[in-house]
Image (tube, rainbow, N blue to C red; front, side, top):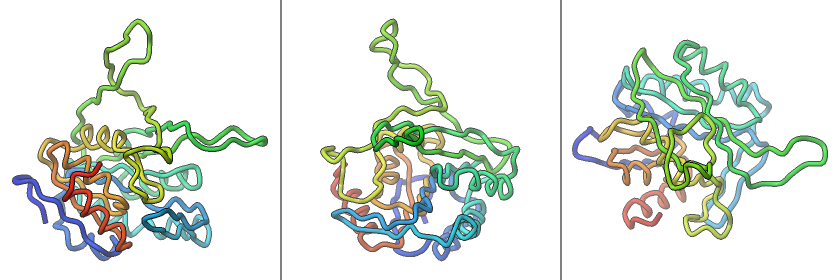
Length: 246
């Protein structure tokens, strides 16, 4: 497994519940965990598909529990984790994280506001995901990210990011899109990795999908480990890392 220097990138095929134990305990600086969301459907695109169907929210939480326990074991004492979820189960995921990490380790409830998507005549449009940030111990790494200012007075300047991250999702015409369902924008992962992982540290993504987390780590001078159960995802991640395709 990677050490802090030199930078290395390790992409493995398999369920993270089997691969986490192969990572040394207390060895990872930052985990970004973007699991299935319990949407009740199969997500498909040109490069692959994954099934996101559980027998209710209780079954979903029991799917996450052992994987988050292993994530906790893998983090350094000063490490931290962000769990990416949405309205389907974010309330229950936070309760689970309080149980496993301790409510006193809760750092931020980040909102990723992305704008795209449909609207409903019966309720407010759902235009955000939830990112729950927890520390393992009493100290953790944080570098305040800078984002472009939106006011006319500060035009051309940057400001410290707040807990609402206004980053567009990838539309179908985006040059960044690589064909993997639920692909997240590189701008989002670069912001999170730079903020939460120290320089030359180690990032781990146990549901790495198209590999965007590992690409962000590569661009920012961090080592990275990626797991995915889909062979297509592992192949795509390795291709992107090797060729520099963004």
